[in-house]
Image (tube, rainbow, N blue to C red):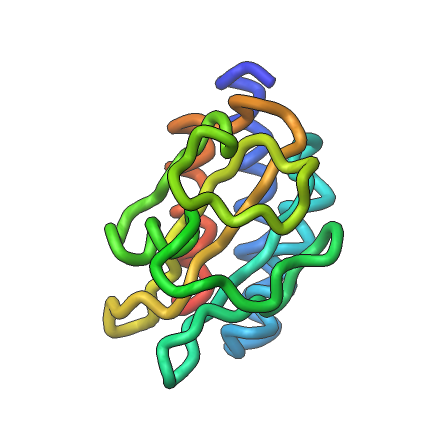
Length: 154
């Protein structure tokens, strides 16, 4: 999808999600809604969901759409932990070339991870999106997904 078309789609998705966020202030409910909408509105999103940090420092799957996921990600490995540790969005064009990539489904080819911050600015987890196509994600995805994620704790 070209950048202009992608931005237009994200703009419509953002408005839809923003309107739904007033129905509940619960972050978990908001994450469920976000993962569902993104998964069903973006054609190349193969797996869309959230991994959240537990009180004892584990990274555990929560709401998601797509095939069965890894329930817990090994500490400090994979794209999600990389995004959390670096405190920034990570785009991976080809997951087979990412050091210590965690393969939950061999059909995943590219990935984007966006850290999720709570009201105090602390990272509480990550939005993780996989595609079954190479080089799916770009800076448009990063910018737009960061805006959407900011709605969770707004």
